Length: 114
Length: 113
Image 1 (cartoon, each protein chain N blue to C red):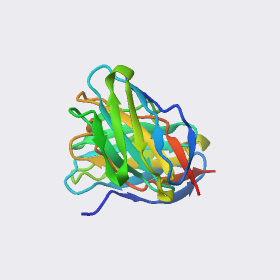
Image 2: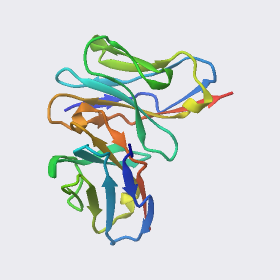
Image 3: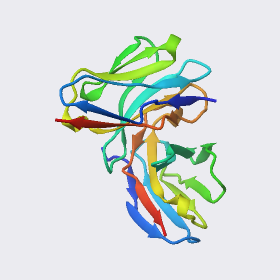
């Protein structure tokens, strides 16, 4: 069974640009969560989608947005990039929702903002 | 609000020695507790979980953790570490409510020969 796939794995952008990251969950999983990981802040929750609905949202500015499609694939978008947005963005899928904790993570998309 | 504290940022252990990583949580109801491991350049992998029942839970790769409600702790242990255990370890808390899963800041484990 295929795992969680995130694309692209690496990308470099400049300040002010926008970026879209994609996540394909494990087949049958309806929940997709996004996390930002930085050395100083650890894993910060961005948002969770369950059956195309945003179920929960973390404390990030409105520049961070996401969506989920009917096939459970999810995208997150960051507009007007800032240097501080440089991070590893991790996507995780689960069958019943992230609060149950049984998350399956992708390898992440490493974003560098110059 | 729920929270997780991992007091040790970095731990160094000799190969073959025992290991204990500390985790303290704050949660208003019965918690679901988890340990995840992240190898360099990889995503996180679930090591073990506690939902209810026996407070000593066994996980993959020879790890175990003990839930102690009175101490609000869920420490991870391994009797004998291997060089391949070098990684970052994250404790997390969730629950039955519609809340997000909350992670600790992680403990980096270094293994020396």
